[in-house]
Image (cartoon, rainbow, N blue to C red; front, side):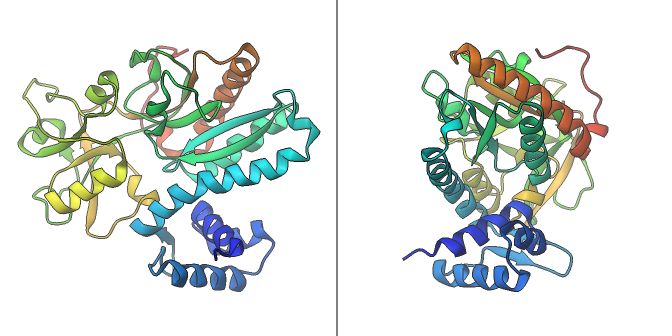
Length: 321
């Protein structure tokens, strides 16, 4: 039988990547949280965290379990809260999804700022894989808004059925490769050099995003060598990196939230940056759309303050709204 105290301890440490802060949030001692996490690791028979004297990081198994457990736990917590909360009636809850690779500080401060400034609303947050929202286009979204990584400002991607707010942050591009890859020892790589190496591309995402995430040619027009994957999930891309020796184009800092042994991250020069932005269905009702725009604006304000990448790359002059 699952012990929910162990699950809560695991999720709290995964959120904060810090046992002390997780313990504070749960109202428990650090020793108790550590004990619960160790018990949970024994239950699932795999290590979930890499612990050093300086930092705590999710293992690949931990990152996968976190992505699977969070939506279910958040949905259960939301159902328990809303069943006895009259304020939940009438649409006062904004369901917000966050990509699991976003910094916890950004997520927490955005939610807090929105609930403070928009007191008639409260947020029910759920984590999802970065690209999960692409499955929802044209369907019923399980959340009202989703904050995620994109390969460019959303207004430039031409996505039908999707509305978007301003960009919250930019991050320079990076290439993730196995430690034995020919480029692994480099401090940076020029975009033109990518043509000589197989790079992951996804068949199950819209063409506008696919071509922007993994260009078909280098900036000078040299064709790229693509390794097509019939998926849209990071876990599969990372297996291709470790098992097949290909590269995965992403944003700098990915391995801080999704650590993997034997994998390195190399900054890529000469490519437009990745962006963090808020998206939602353009079929949402007027009240939800108003709240979504409000939330997106606040997320942009918070991102400019707490996400360090914004100071690295200058924002474009075009207003994505």
